[in-house]
Image (tube, rainbow, N blue to C red; front, side):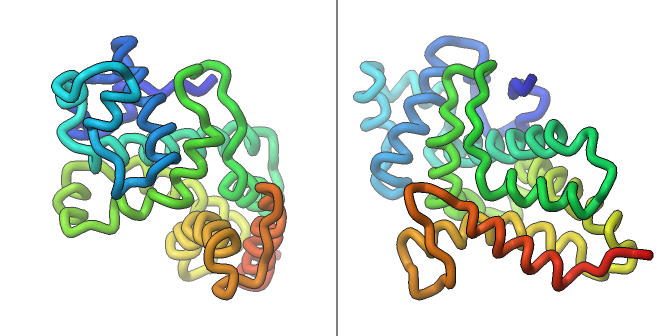
Length: 227
């Protein structure tokens, strides 16, 4: 059962652990809804406080700014996908099949997690598609990297890279391909929905199956299974 805890959230992302109080959990749940509704640029702690019937001062006790709050949600998502990969591949021996399942999880990580009622994974997935790059495509990326804010992402990418090397131990770019699979899963969905001339796939009624087909196409042509 997946349940994020203080142990797998990098220190410095928050001032006070939001998982330790009802108001903290409400900040997480309501911020997901508001980020999804109005986007990162329009999001403010004042608007979040109004939605929560709270005040800005309370929010600033938990998070220094909206950037770190968004990054907290992104870290949550990285851990959620990592959990899904472990859960759905634990009894799979064939590495090629295992990578196919990983791709499917990257594309459609919207499975609800009943153990965490205050996080809607379906909405969180939409935030990752539209807003997550704003959490780490910043001028402070090097400093935040040194603080360990991206350790969870490194673990996730390493997990995928290890499976790639299981398929072909001589493949020269396992981490590059792993990170590209993750980013392409989100980018292709975004392009198909908003910039269709940048993509050759279509997304209808939030069905992302064609994105998974595309990524598996790349996988089959780039990785040669070892004999």
